[in-house]
Length: 504
Ligand SMILES: Nc1ncnc2c1ncn2[C@@H]1O[C@H](COP(=O)(O)OP(=O)(O)OP(=O)(O)O)[C@@H](O)[C@H]1O
Image (cartoon, rainbow, N blue to C red; front, side):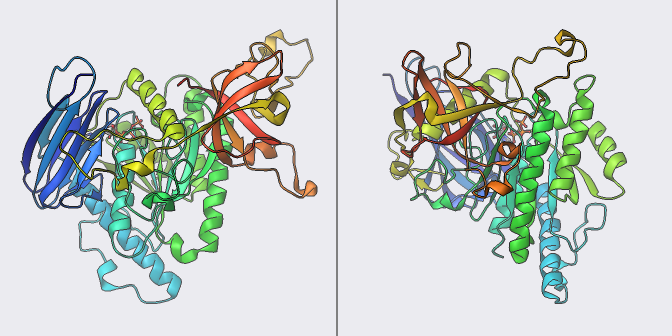
């Protein structure tokens, strides 16, 4: 194996950022040696090497100026360079706009808390900043972020959540991810929400929102993130918009329950990261789905602020639809956001699945000791999945809506379609072409223990307790091999298969 490393220092002036993009099989360590700096709102601790890998793309921003040291290493073949494939410093960032937004949201939180306690609103919560547009009421910020592909929606969500967590007021805002491609804290295809208690780190696209307790060992410092997960199972929202809508509404009901149980906690608010398909009208019919899903988010999470990232047309559209009842704000897109192409997204999907099963340890560049991946100690990040052979009958598998629905025109005259797009269809692993080999399955929480509380489509409303991958099907013996991050038994469990596949 060929290895080579390099070392470099960057001096950043106030309100500038160092942007980098890593190639595959490279790793980077960044150490803050002077001043203060942050990555998407998460502060770096001075003197601690932060590791980045798996083609990570990110920026180190400083409000006050800083010096950072980089150690870079590439592994394997073709040592074409000794630095990230792209790296530069920019003094044009939208961070002050994002900072102002954070201040406005902070005022909303403070006012909402004061209202809850019946106390007067503190002077500091009355804005002296040039406040963005409409009047923010005494409601917590419940924010929907919309924007086209590669506009930086996820990064902005992280900045806003990290600033709230850093504010020192004990806020734990909820971050919800309704972008199935993103993966969030689970696997690609999932929709999730979690209360965030500590800064969300960025070190690898395999964990875009930091590590979660579902796949990580309990020793992780960030294991406070306990996401609530639903499984959509596909990359594209247009594939089954009705299911998307139902899951969004389910997430909303859960978040609302949490808010009802903890009114004080609810004042921290919620930030929703959305798929880029919400911003793009791609053809006849798609626009309706898009509108329906945006409306579902607004209702489900009782949104009071919509942020549009750098998209004039969408801004006008949202102003027209919601401007009279909600605050709709256009915010600038960062010039640093990287255009991620299809093949990169496919590789990220693989990194995410691999990390879900095995964990991820980014190799430290030579000479780097005590490196951290977003605050975690490296030995904690290795997972040992179990590969078990189970009987076909141990696990009940469904697919939501039939994959191979006959077109209505092919049905006998007068016959209604039997399978709706929301109907759970039992999948028989013994059937050739079941589509289960290498499929990613979401294992669901149990049905309601009280038979009287059960209903037909209950399956659609069950949360996910974990993901498995079927790595072998032995049809003659009616057995299958299942890779799972935990040792727990699957007997009697119910799982859903979508369209995601993964091979190690
Ligand atoms: N200022 C920046 N400097 C360098 N890289 C950045 C910056 N902002 C964002 N990125 C990177 O650009 C990529 C795309 O950003 P992000 O995921 O936030 O966009 P998005 O709009 O959520 O994407 P999607 O199209 O998946 O919805 C990510 O890899 C992110 O880390």
